[in-house]
Length: 413
Ligand code: PMP
Image 1 (cartoon, helix red, strand yellow):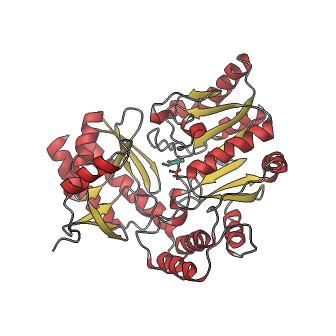
Image 2 (tube, protein in one colour):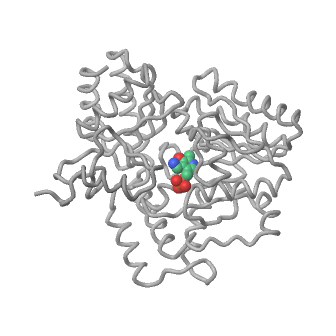
Image 3 (tube, helix red, strand yellow):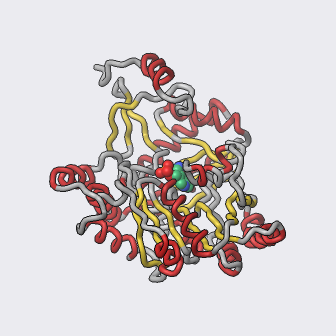
């Protein structure tokens, strides 16, 4: 019995008619999902798909503990940060306990884009500079300023935005600090004062660039020595994905000036934040009263606190580490047998498998969808399989994915 009366072709026609033409769907045959639980999503015919793509439902789709926290709080009080309430304080305290003591203040937003946009305003105020460095296929969000710092979108960069090559191989990673220094020289030569270096600490859209851990340290030193701030975009790497800490930057032994976080923070509900060193945010705060109506609302905070509880209680960092290593090892075994896989990169449950071409990547992503496993693609050349499941992913789930991938590679690579 179908769980939705609408057919995929009806929905496609209605989308084309009423949604803006800016929207895109995943897969040659889009999936019409009607419900989800844990690591499984279900289509209108009741077919299940293993979700190996979505980092947002970090503790699993519709986790009952998170749903209960949300519904309970929604029935009691939902208001903003201009009243005295516990939620934002408890959440700020819990978040600050996961970072170095230099980071002391939290600002809540609704999206990662807003958090990054705010980070840019704070960096400009703190440094008096306007120049920013991003990697050359980065994605950081949707506001005009941040879209102008997201070369992955293909739109022109904003004023005083400079790009450096993303560290695709080990040699690039070793040179990453030098690239930042060279870029800072170029910036100064053009009369632009540095304000910040903004990077996604797992370089997700650049193609999942993870190794060797520590390669970010010289880059952070370089920007801070030049008077700029280091902004760690943790919107994708954050909340335990690497299994080696709550945040991606922790693998690199660095302390950011600003951290932005979002996506997994509410397991699917809009809550995001910026965490700052006190001295970084002081100048901005002395001039601006920032108020974000929905940022840090009572329900959002209850949800985010529940997500933190589940991450802790279910030992999801350890799970990400162990299952991630198991999955990566499985992919490396497949790499020995299938020449189409060029390199397997990753940290915890964020894995990028670089393929021999964009075409193979497309065939594999669509082939996996037909096999009932949802993955995506990344990288400047769209040649990397992006595997980034909820952190509750088990060894059995990894086996299911690997078996499907082997069938698809046999057919299509
Ligand atoms: N930074 C990174 C690294 C992201 O991947 C994204 C979203 N894909 C954002 C920022 C923007 O977050 P949001 O979509 O919540 O605005």
